[in-house]
Amino acid sequence: MPLYRDEGVVLRTHKLGEADRIVTLLTRQHGKVRAVAKGIRRTSSRFGSRLEPFMVADLQLYEGRSLDTITQADTLGAYGQIIAADYDSYTAANVMVETADKLTESDSNHQQYLLLLGALRSLSRAEHAPSATLDSYLLRALSLAGWAPSFVDCARCQEPGPHDAVVVQMGGVVCPDCAPTGSPKVDSQTRELLGSLLAGDWAVVDAADAAVRSRASGLVGAYVQWHLERGLRSYAHLSSSSKMESRQ
Image (cartoon, rainbow, N blue to C red):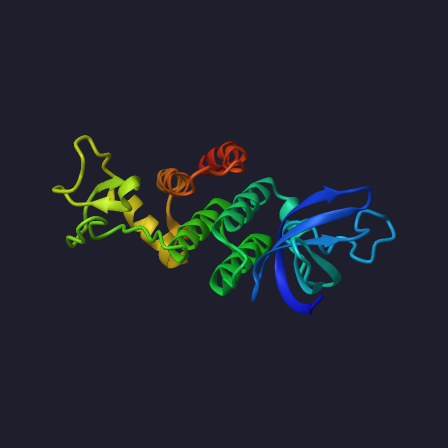
C-alpha cells in the first residue's frame, strides 16, 4: 500500500467499530479523502483532538482500496475548540464544511482547500461577523465550482447593469427583458453588499447595516440551496443564529 503525506481540513467524522473513526478530509493535493483513524476513541490515542471537525493537520496516510488509513497527524491549525465555543461561528463552520463536502471530490482541488482553510481561520479569529464570513465563503465556493453569480450585469444575456431584478435560478441579477414576470427586486445596497461578499471587499461588508446583511444572507442562502441539489442540512441550525445576529 503506497504511503503519502498531505495536509487537510477535517470535514466530519463517523464512528467505526469500538475504537476507530472514519474521518472525511479536504486535502490540499488529493481532494476529498476518507480515511480510518484507528484507536482514536481510546483515551490513550496518539491522535488526541487533532482529527476533530474544523482542525487542520499535516497527515501521513496509507492508501487503501476504499478507505485510506491515517498513521500520523500533526496539528497545523487548531480551530475546532475555538470555533465550537461560539454558537454563531460553530453553526457557520458546519455549513462551510458541509458545502465543501458536497462540492469536492477525490481529485485535487487546491483552491477549494485554501478557501475553506482561510474561512475557518477567519472564524476562529473573529475577524468579521460569522454570517458575513459564511456568506462570502459560500459565494466564492460556488464560483470555484462553476456557479459564479452576477450582481451587476445580466446573468442570462450579459446586458450591462446595474439591474435590480434577482432570480437565483438564473444566476443572479437579470435585465428587464430576461426577468420573468413578478421577479423580486433588490435594492442597490444589498446588491453592492453581495458583490462585496463575492469579491472579499471587507470594508464594505463590515460597514453594512443589519437589515442589508439580513437581505443579502437570505439571497445567498437561496442561491446555495438551489445549486446544491439536496440542500444543506446544517442550514436549518444556522437560521435562528443568523436572525439573532442580524438584530444586533
